[in-house]
Length: 174
Image 1 (cartoon, rainbow, N blue to C red):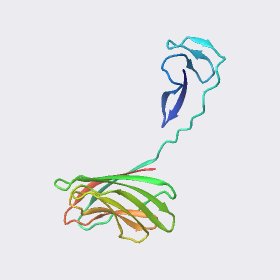
Image 2: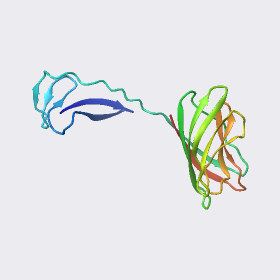
Image 3: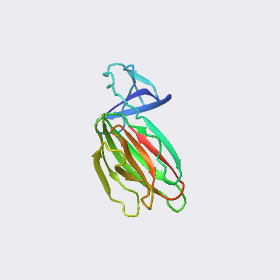
Image 4: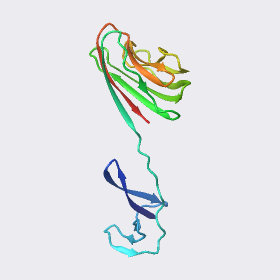
C-alpha cells in the first residue's frame, strides 16, 4: 500500500495529512516531491507517481448571540444564496433552555426553504418554504416561545414570543 503525505494550510494552521491508498497498512510514505521514505523518514527512491491533488473547502461559520426582551425581534440575518446553510441554535435562559437545528436554502429574492428538528418538549420535524415575514421556521427553546422566522425572502430573524428576557446563540455553517 502507498501512503501519500502532503501539507495543507487550513485557517493558518499547518495540518499534516496522510491519504491512504490500497488495502493494507504499512509500506512506504510518498512525499509531495515524489520521494519515497519509510516510517523513519529515510528516503528510498523517487520512482513513485506524484500524489493525488485534493481540494479542501473550509466551511464558513457565523455565530449570532441574542439577548432579547419580551416580544422582541432580532435584526435580519442574511443567508448566502443557493447553498445549504446548517443552522443550530440554543436558548440558554434558566428554565427555558433548548436546542434546535435546521438546514436552510435561500433562493435569492424568492423564498427560504428548510427542513430540521424543533426543540424538545414535542420535538418534531419542521419543514417548509416561504418568503413571507413572520413565517415560523424553528423553535429554539423548551416551551416553544423563541423561534427563528422568515424575515424576508433573503433573511431570517430570531423572535422572542415569551414574556421574559431570553438569551442564546445561533450558529450558521455554510
